[in-house]
Image (tube, rainbow, N blue to C red):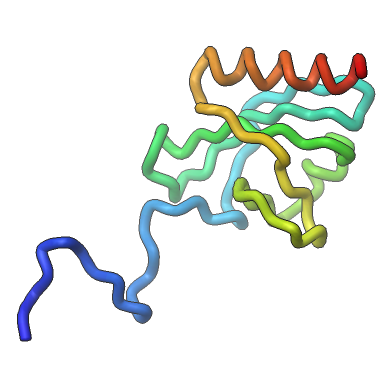
Length: 108
């Protein structure tokens, strides 16, 4: 018996530092043709990059995404809520790449 210095993986302790899909704020948007959206989203419970995420959605209108009470930044096959199909590093460069992808999708 002992205490691990590598952290705890106990199932009864809440996870910390992960984005809570119920707590988010959309900080910026870049939309073309209402079906290609890049979003800057902040998840205050997330610890890396101060909780910021750059997400790209295809096939969801900005209005439908903004009306969601649950927005998971992770990739998922669950189509009950909008799921990003691409993510970029939440930096100025990542935001520019996300906008370039949206432009490319809209022009194909």
